[in-house]
Amino acid sequence: MMPTQLRYPMSGNRTNDMRRSNCFLFALWLFWTRGGYWACRRSRHIVGLHWLWSPDLRTWLHYEPLAPKRLPHAVWHKLYYEGRIRRGDG
Image 1 (cartoon, rainbow, N blue to C red):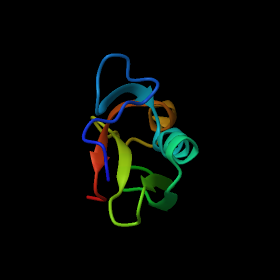
Image 2: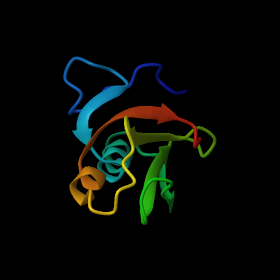
Image 3: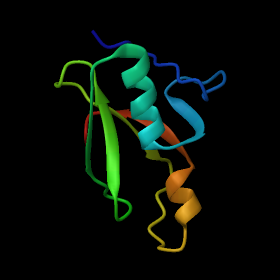
């Protein structure tokens, strides 16, 4: 069963929102702390991979940017950005 509120170490007092991180660190943290599965797919925002985590292969959580930047020179933004935790792969 999935928790309704998820706390991530970098979130401070907020839930389901984080300050700055990336999808890889988010999926890795959940895999280490809760087990389950992690997977990658082609990113919709950059040329590269996007990482997701699932406890049961039916429900997926991932970390996505609040304001995606598609600029090729915004490399730092792609690796370390302000975002939110999303449910599903949409």
